[in-house]
Length: 160
Image (cartoon, rainbow, N blue to C red; front, side, top):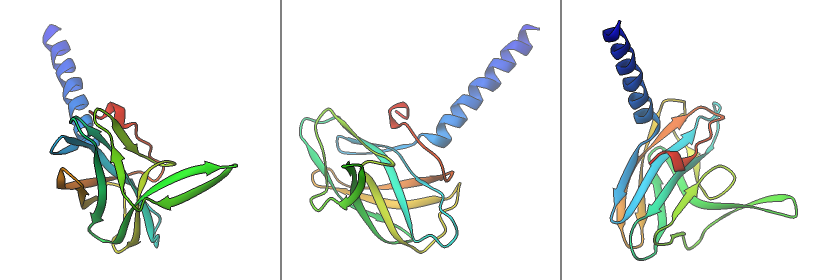
């Protein structure tokens, strides 16, 4: 009976590790950790999508996300979404997004996000979108955006 219990525990542990590996992935450039870049699947014919991730600055000085390039997309912009007097407003950040030292900035639905415009490829669940993030001080890093379900949400604080 004991070997069976050990086998069951091993199977559960393997499943937990495999599941975490599928959903949580990260990249590093300089003192910045890029946590779980992802996007939501879009309906057929959609021309826009959102890109999401978290950026943790483990360094001693601020840095700034200046540019995002994603394959299969005409243009990617760093946006901020706010609600003013009950009206949601979205605008591109002309000077990029600052990441203060010792802080994590989360790009998520309803807040800071990457607007992917002019989709040239289907954004379907399970797909991967290759991208590049360019920072003011840390330089550039290649990343992969995992495409999750259309209604997906993600808490980046659990992805470390």
